[in-house]
View 1: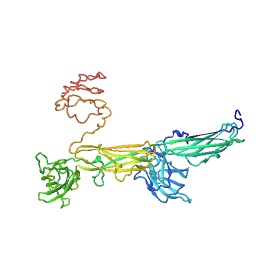
View 2: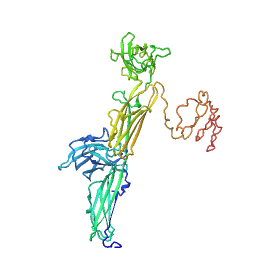
View 3: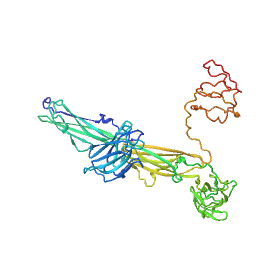
View 4: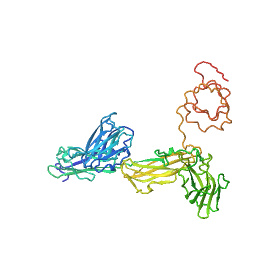
Length: 639
């Protein structure tokens, strides 16, 4: 016929949208920032239960703080969770939620505490089985919830994985409850009976929703809304796909069908946190020193109250000095020594051998008393260095002078040897120009997705680059789950007998499932001040005090300086200081003004000028900068 008959038209329209339980479109939901410890009160936490995780499977960054103990084997569930405050100052409430597929979510909240709503600093959560009607403890976990210690989403504390936290007035949520709202409209001209309404969630099995179609059948123009509650983890990389299909039959047959789907792609970025520490390997027992605390060698001269118990040299392979020597004579063959290694013999003036061995470039040569442990090393020794059978160098009658109060200096060279250290014993710390520092680095996955470390390196003052992934036993790429860390250690030698600033830089880069990647960089700066003064800092000193003084001093100084400086500076400084100090400095300047003023001014000006003048004025002004506020004339003459 020319047109469809009006009484057999079956037409169903299926439309679905996605909203959170708060009515926010799923399209506008972003992956949360994983950091829960931001220095503010934590008000609630939500955990999922991982039945396959024992305490050994914990992965979090609360090192030495969080504790876990397995009591009985874990069960698939359902389980119970009980949480309590360690200090018993708060009453906690735990609610359980079944999110399908055997998964459980536990929300830990506060019933009563001070301040209101804040979780206690430490909580103890126990997982229990209730299969027999009698709760049986399976595992307990101690967790820091103060907000001051690292706490991140997707970290695992035994079988409890953190899925959300309330902190700083914000709720950070991984697993969200979503409302899939489906509208069924009869847009035909006849009654229809809905016979099928099925949804498929991300490749899963079909789920029948027909029982929620009320009313059914639908008259022409009538519609019905069906809400299907599902859950999606916005902290993981993945696609959220929801498909729904509806079918209907009119009374006189014919049937009709429609379908709709919703799709959302979720790609949270990875986050990696780098930690770096630098410690002195030669720290005293039970007192680990940071690199910034390495003691300076204030006196470079070998000086012991009794005698040196050991003296330390380094081999360089250098020739005898061309100028005359003092305190020893240097004799060598024409051929130069092997710069890498040689054989060295040290004897006393009486011919007793106190050292005989192979020496190599860059390693300590420690000379001690071989017969008396901790005994004195003679102040005068003879040294013979040989490379092969034809090349040698002798340091004859070599006087260290360590017990005379006039010893040799550290950093001095004596032919093929550099003097680098000494020890006096008697509890005094060894003086050595060289020390080893230990660089400890840890890269922690503090995001919510797995990542792979692709670059991990250290450098000191830009050279050399130390590839931490290239160290023995490292399998590349290094993969980290949320809460896991990868730590490496490297030992480097530094020289502290000269003034130098050390900059240690660590850098890490990683890829993740979003292909966006993440990185972090950290550096430590420390100084060594050797036998001279410390070099100036690379950065300017701290800013001066905030405000200038409110008023100048009331009276001029009682007496002019004793002696004027020889000459004023050729020109003023390029720029004035950022701000004058709030109060005048306690000490006068190192160089006084060129000449004392003829007479002091009668009264100082009430306010300092906004900017200092570029040149000093030749003479003081005759009158104050402004008229006094009254008519009081007061002259004061002082000579």
